[in-house]
Length: 218
Image (cartoon, rainbow, N blue to C red):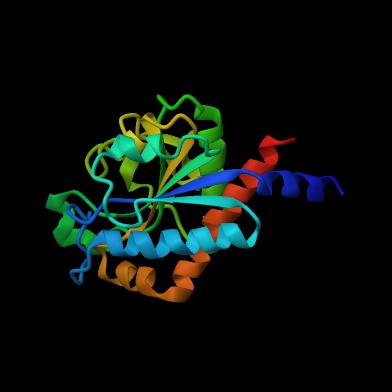
């Protein structure tokens, strides 16, 4: 009965799902020439569907590709309990010839976010669900040469600190940025394009969000 009550209370919360990038600057171009924004939109819509299936309220941000100013995204998410920005990853330009070396998901939070503890708890919950669904953290972002020295906040679950990340730093609520996979890796891109894989990723992200919001009520 207690779990049912907690789940019901969590379902009354609202999650802002942000579609990373926008039409004029669509993010990384995949190995086969597809803009990241298209991947982000498809996954964000699937995460939205998964959350709504479980009764959560979802505010979708940036789905029309018209949010050029990053802090407008977090401004328009005010009132939500959690901000989740959906992205797909790349590597530094000089590493593109070796792109097949890089794969996996990464999660980012900012130590400047006013809800740091909740941001970390939600990021860790999402990472744990992704791992449980068979996905692997990329981990290369922590490397000073390969990944720009983004230190781990939770290494096991692929969570990094990225303090100047705009959508995490400027959010009034807890904020997590999800990098679902490395699009410049041709094999990983093919996985990200698979509707069944996308559904598994979305279910894991949504599951982590629900778990985090439910635990907050205990």
